[in-house]
Amino acid sequence: MSEIKSSGQKYVRHIFLVLLAVCFSGYAVGAEEVQVEEGRLTARSAVNKLGAALKATLGGALATGDLVAVLDVCAEQAPQMADTVTAQSGITVGRTSERTRNPANRPSDWQLAVLHEWQADKERGIDISKREFYVAQPDGGFRYMRPILVKPPCLVCHGEIQSAELKAALENRYPDDRATGYQVGDLRGAFVAQK
Image (cartoon, rainbow, N blue to C red; front, side):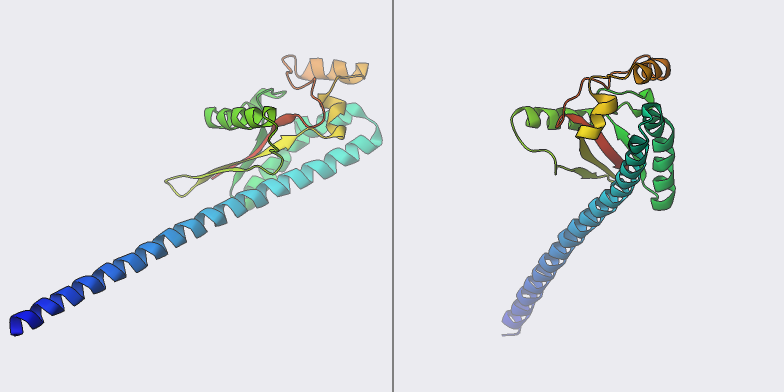
């Protein structure tokens, strides 16, 4: 009888340990999912700050009618805005594109792969405007991208350039510029965040 009782206790203890392991493994998966979502929200917030600052500054420059000043916003002020958001958030933010104007914004291999995927989806008629790319890194960091689609104000500098003054400024500042000829709705590039 004592052998049965001992065997029964071992069985109950075994079941208890299995149930305990199942409970905690579910908790670990849930915690990982929470961490991923927190990372995505943090990256999105940093990119939103950069996008909002850039949009407001570009809008102000466009309102003046001085197209070279608009070019200066992207060339000089946008990197400073990215540096400010990076310093405030601890997340490295910026912009990239397959067709760069500023060589410093060339995409890395992983960024280029994401841009190619989005472009292929766009060509298949898939709406990518709300798309995000997010991957958690083993070291606790992450990689994040959100598309930048061309809107009508973007065409001033990224469409068919009409202003001779702007064309000359672009050729002077960016002799290897590949960031013109876009149309409204085209994939211009992406906001990027990394930690």
